[in-house]
Image 1 (cartoon, rainbow, N blue to C red):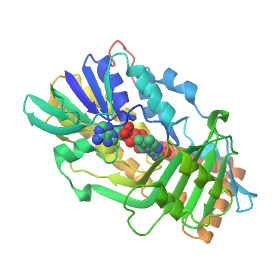
Image 2 (image 1 turned 90 degrees about the vertical axis):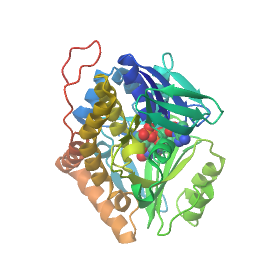
Image 3 (image 1 turned 60 degrees about the vertical axis):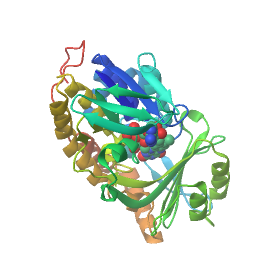
Length: 386
Ligand SMILES: Cc1cc2nc3c(=O)[nH]c(=O)nc-3n(C[C@H](O)[C@H](O)[C@H](O)COP(=O)(O)OP(=O)(O)OC[C@H]3O[C@@H](n4cnc5c(N)ncnc54)[C@H](O)[C@@H]3O)c2cc1C
């Protein structure tokens, strides 16, 4: 089949990899002018994520980029350590920077996939046999299938399914990630309603992650919003805001879940965040890669309507479980009061002293990541049973 994918983040190139293995011709359009760097670390955990990476041959490409982030020092305004956040409990089995992962996936697929950067779909029209698409440069084409892997604010979703404001469920938590020149110690600093994490994976330039809660809806996802939210913050936050003002890889969005009553319409289907964004702590990257594998495997039957229905039947309960886990993320990532911050720090101290508690916590997170039973798909050229 000739398949068009919108979005070259994580889900898009992962799908290009799987579709190529099954013999399809793939075109990926990405609105950014080049693969987008940036983002915090994302993790894969448990046998489902790692099994899919292994089976698709992606694991050896991703593993060398593992961050191996150590424990985070939880500091007060004067930079004194008041607790330690044990990394092992939070960072999964394989943690990589999101930007590294996206770059690796695009590089692995570039030879056989037509990437068109700086381009987006402007219209979609379909009949039972195919989809006619026009692009914003005036060109167009006809495809057997169009996949929206264009993230939380998917344009394919808007064009093919129509706007449904009820589909987006904001979690009241905002996240901003950007790189910071120089290396920093791995640190977590919190004030009521706002938290900062800085780390220097691979000993390279640091990455900062700022979380904050706001009661009112924020319009416009601009740096000024972040700067205003952290006005007057202590510790080394002013240095970080200065770095943000000069950063060219910053990412900022409101943690939002996407809940749709269907993921496909005719020959247009959604994948990854476009279909089921979960928010932080919801295995969004693992879901994107597993979903790509499931979609490509189901399409191997050649019967598009039933493949799309089966893809959704496999992935929907899995995505819903992950969304449930992420729904409480705001309280954990940006505790609202001094009391809640102190409670969280006590929990970290308890974890530090009790390895069984640490293991229990990690096991609970892994249980969500493995909450799916994948059909026994045949990966082209392999006879291994997952
Ligand atoms: C730059 C960036 C940084 C991120 N950082 C974090 C982070 O720190 N923590 C976290 O939890 N999640 C982060 N995310 C989201 C995270 O990558 C996803 O939740 C998850 O990996 C699922 O991936 P996805 O491919 O479905 O979506 P995404 O990774 O969001 O990829 C979607 C891609 O589609 C592209 N796109 C959007 N609209 C269009 C359009 N109209 N036409 C063509 N292409 C389009 C985007 O530029 C992007 O490359 C980030 C996303 C981006 C784009």
